[in-house]
Every structure is written in C-alpha cells, then in structure tokens.
Length: 589
Image 1 (tube, rainbow, N blue to C red):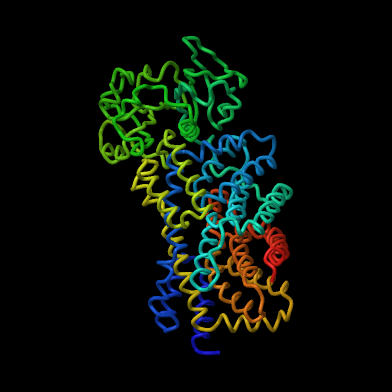
Image 2 (cartoon, rainbow, N blue to C red):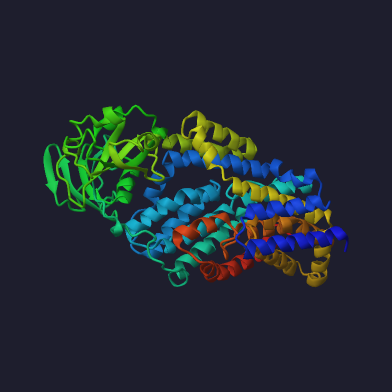
C-alpha cells in the first residue's frame, strides 16, 4: 500500500471521527479533509475544486431558488391543506403526511421540500393535538424514500448521476430509472411507519405550549368573494380546532351568529371574529380565501413580498391612545395596518376599527419589513418586535409557481432539457413572475449543504487518485468470492454505514469508486452497483447525521439520536433486502 493510500485512510478516519464525535460543523470538517489531501499532494488543485463545478451541485443550488418560489406563494400550504384533511387517528395522520410528502419529494428536491413542510405539518399537528415527534420523523422518512424514486427528488441521485457522467462511459441515468427499486422501498417504508410508528416513535409532547401565552388577540377575518371556503362548514374549513383560538361570532348580512356551531356553512362575505394566541392568528393569515376584514390593508402602499407581521405595545404618549383605530388614522400615520389587538386577556367586542386603544394594548400589525428598525426608538410604542417567519404568502402567485415546477418536471422527463438547464429556467421564471424576489432567493440557498457536497466530491477524488478504491475492492472481491448477492449486500452495508456516520452524498461519492472497481474485478454489470449505492445513500434513515432532512426535524420534533436508531434500524434492514433482491433482477449482472 502506497503512501498516498495511507494518507487517505488517515484523513478519512479523522473526518469520520470528527463528524461522529465532535460538535464541529460538517462543512468545516470536510473542507479541512480536502485541504489536507491537497497539502499532502494526494489531489491537485483542480481535483480539490472539482465539486464546485459539478453539475449536480449547481443544480441543487438552483433548486433551492425554485423551492423558495413555492414557499413564498403559499402554494405548498394550499396543496397540503387539501391533502392532509382531518384524519380520525394518529395512524391515518401519519399516512396522510407520508403519501403526499413522498409523491411531492419525487419531483421537488426533498431537502428544501421538508424545510417548507415542517411548519405546515407542525401547525397541522397542533390543530389535531398530536405531538410533533409523532409526525415530523415520518415526514422526513417519506421525503427521503420518495425522493429516491427520481433523478431530481434528492441531491444524492443528482450527485450519483454527475459522477457516472464524469467517471464512466455510461449514459446519464433516466428521470424514473431509480423508481424500479426505490418505489417498492418507499411503499414498504410507509407501511412500516403506519404499522409500527405508534410503538417505535417517541412522544415528546408539544415543543410550544400555547396556553402559556397570556396575550389573547381579537381579530376579524372575512371570507373573500369566490373563496374556496364558500359552502364549507367551520369544521371542514379547519377553523374549529385551531389551538388557542376561539371563533366568537359570525356577522352575515348585518346579522350576528353567536356561539357558532361546527356545522355552520361559510358564505362569501362572512365576517368572522376570533380570539386567541398569536400563533393561531398567524395561521389564519395563511388560509387561502380568508383575509383581514379591515379594508385598510388593501390601501397599504407596500409590495406584498416586503410585508411582515409585527407586534407593538402602545405607550401612554402614543397619539392614537384614547382614540379608535379608525379615528387615529393608524394606517396613514404609521403606514401599517392593525390586524389584531390584545389587552391583558380581556375579550374585546365590536369591530376592530371601532376598538378604542389604550396604553399597554399589544397590536399585531402588517407593515413594511423595516417598520421595526424605524420605530424601535419611537416614543409611540413601548416595544416593537418582528413575528418570525410571517411574511404573508402571495396566494395570487400560487398557481403560477405550481405551473413553473410542473413544466420543469415535464421538460426533464421528456429529456427536452437537462436537469440543470430546466432548473435554471424555472428559477428565472420564479423571479420574473415575482413568485420570489432576489433577496429571498439568495437567502434560500443553503450554502452549508453545497459546501458539504463539493467537499465530498473532493474526498472521492482522493480515494481514486490514492488507489484506495482498488485496494478495498480487491479485499472485498476476496471476501465475497463469486457471490454477486454478497457483493451487493456488502456495498449496500458500507454505503449505509458511511452515510449514517457522515452524510449521504459523501458516502455515495466515496463508495462509487470502490463499487466500480469491485464490479470490474468480478466482470459484472456496474448498473446494479450504481443503483445499490444510490438508494443506500439516498435512504439513510437510522441516524440524524446521514441525511439533511433528519437533522432538520430533530429540533422541531424534539428527537434524540437514539430515536433515529430505534425507528430506522429495522427499516434499514427491510430496505437492504429489497434493494439487493430487486437490483440484479431489474438490471441483470
């Protein structure tokens, strides 16, 4: 074994150790590993930086912008609201999450998809009184398994495809080529979760206790003309079980309907009066077809994408204190519209514009994004603060965003454009149609993920140039003998273990050279090995480290490392059996 191979082993061991047992960020550790390989001469500068120009890495970066367009328009909330519905029990709720999440992740990259769905599913769980820990891990797993079914569903498949194009003479992998094996895996994963999730998933309770919030806002909403809520009952519209929120009354054509029954059907023009905590008031703003009753909102001279929800406490020197919101000309004075008012737990009556403000009242405002900065030192308010993540979705652009993504998928499926070109066009259209502005598009790109991918490719180059791939392949050939099933199982196991210890993309890039050398030495078709590596890496579920979506749900779901192992280890064995059995049947060795 040469010096470079020993250096490669030392660097890989250090990288794995730091990723598993230290608190250092994955991107810093992997970049450090590539830097060591460059300094010791294992790879040259071009090989160290090859990941930055890799087509798969660039495609993933562009897809973050496409996902931002979907998120900013609220298109995903709109779609998921109809798909999630009102399940009868927890098992049905998990299935309601996993089936659409798996389907969507096949066509929208699963990392940004889960980022968009976490608040949607968390809010939905609150309404159903189901702990986030019972829903968010199934969401992550569904997105992982569904994403493995297509070329664009997961960045891992894009990275594998890019490696195949750069390092072999094989043609590009097809849009749905992965689905022959990945679809049975996804169906098995959903069935496993629904069957055993009740026993294997932790129940950590709600991360946020809404009852601890003493502020009880009064807010008026109106059912818009042509609203999709028209004709739906309060229950079906999802307005009955919002946690910490109570529907006080409905005003319809001048008549008041108090103590509203869940079976009352909504009509266009209905004015709904709610009382509740801020989280649920924000939920109301996200419901398509429901808008703030105050017409002043439409006169707010601020572009939709530049608005935010803000809390402000009225001071005793505020010019509007002692006046009604309408008398004080609040919108004209502050270029902001009062959405709701809270007053020491008191339930306020009457129309919002007729409420006479008092010092100490907490106002929920819709205003310019820079309102907090401009008014922080004003004597008119005791306190001014942002309500995080509450830029109102631009529902008018939702269909446009969905159309752009649909066209992108169709174009790639028929191979009219490459994935990179199609995603570039889709991202450009998101910006041109104002589904997303440049600032939010720039913020949507997860640079840590991209750096991890690029650095992983640099480590993969090191495995090849050092000859470590041939050494490991030779050892595996001796061990597996002539059994291709054992060879595939070994590759699956190595990939899954590495992915669980570092990251899925890094594991795929590190194992592919070894798989190529192993298939060559055995004289068999390389394609089943490619698919085994791709699906093993793309379906890493037994640790939070292996896949970004698992890390993303860890905090909101209150999960611990053990939870992933307990739930994911049995499913990993099931996936391994399916992959090793089906791959050589579909692509004969």
